[in-house]
Length: 319
Image (cartoon, rainbow, N blue to C red; front, side):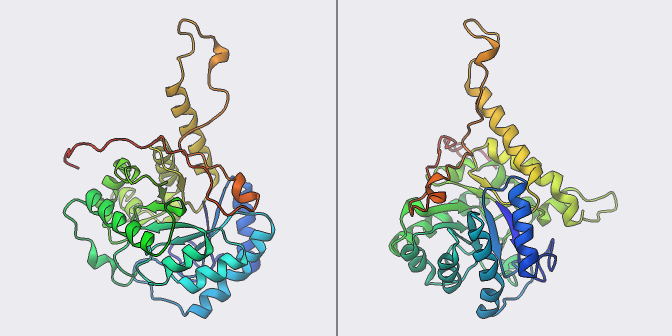
């Protein structure tokens, strides 16, 4: 999933793709680099940011979504507002990516149910201007899992079908640097919920802290892309459905490496009795594969998810 920020103040590339023509061109470039989905957002959720009016958000995203969809792209709208989600789907978006998991707008569940769009429900505790004060957990992995379970139940009550839902652990949202690593190391806890998992680590603060120089200065956002690609590979190998990234090519390559790695692990070893070099995996198939034929054909149903990445929990081992 390639990020198309149509904002003046996003933390990593605010203003760079603000004009609709620039945003569309950037989206097409990301497709050329291997993106399967383009995530178009008109409101920054960087720490401390304030909300923009709804009409301004609509004016930013709708022209971009319409043009990218017209080019055949699978488009996601990054919004917490039900009205924006509805208008975006009408303009051609097929996925609603809601960082609030429906908590920011009580009408979101209804909107998703009525449109039939795929829906990414992220773990969230509050808007960007207050989220840093909300990062108190007993066990961050168990708490995020349980809170997403509650969101799934609420969405079900609003009429959202289970097969519409994708889960996102919400890296960086109400989570200090050290809290993000257990979530990545224990994606299996989210796989237990039976839905595909999206990982959005790209250029986030916890990577800046990890890559700080000897004086303790955080690495700037664009210097975090190599680390992002490493997380893409590890997340794919752990069974993530999708990774959301600002630069696509390196992460697309990383996912292919993870696919080859996991496919080889499932096959007989080359050179073992009864095999030949030709028996090595010929096609890269993995738990991160997304079958998009149903979307590209214009059908309303969700694509086929490969859920074989689900694993048992760690049995209470300290995280």
